[in-house]
Image (cartoon, rainbow, N blue to C red; front, side, top):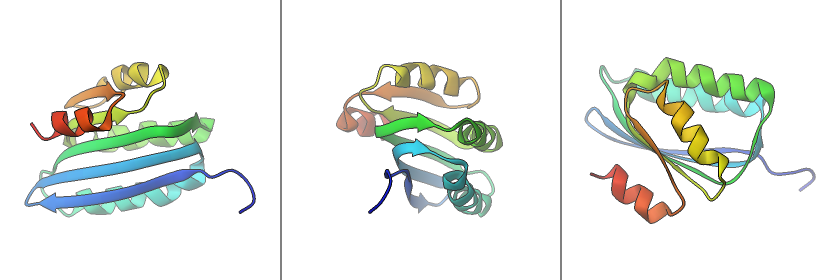
Length: 126
């Protein structure tokens, strides 16, 4: 495979109006990545009247965003921020804690950063 790996894989589970969203971000995200990601999330959440989302965002292999992709991420957060009950950002990079704090400004639910995925999953399930 030529070039560096980048993108997001998404898993969505649903139980009535509750969603559990698992995202794994790899490499440096691009606008093209968000052109794929955003419609999937929009469609999944658009089918429920009042979705309550718990999300695990695995950033262990994330290197960052291109400027336009960061803007796409911001817009996605504004569009769906009130639908998230809890967001766990998992990874071992110091800037993820800052990202969690900033993300909490745009979401109605709690946002926390974790180094351990098990601890993140435990927190999400409470």
